Image (cartoon, rainbow, N blue to C red; front, top):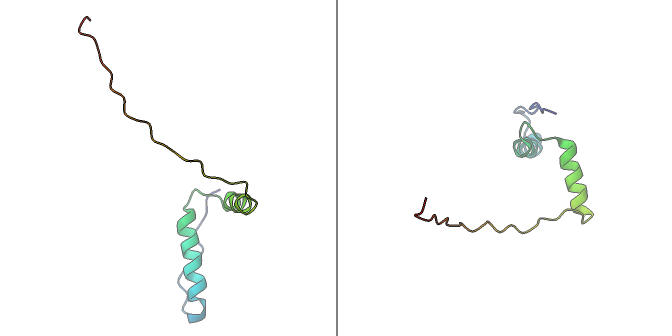
Length: 69
């Protein structure tokens, strides 16, 4: 699902906070992210079903070649 930016600057000062929050949300989601998926992830996080597993980058390995080739 591709999102289209719907928020444009509004001249009313009482909308400025809401406008800024909507712009931030649209910037975070980007064009290719689905709002339903974000809702699922937020719900899973609230229910304790969403965890971030630790990541340890692999160590570089050296490859030794024999001179008998």
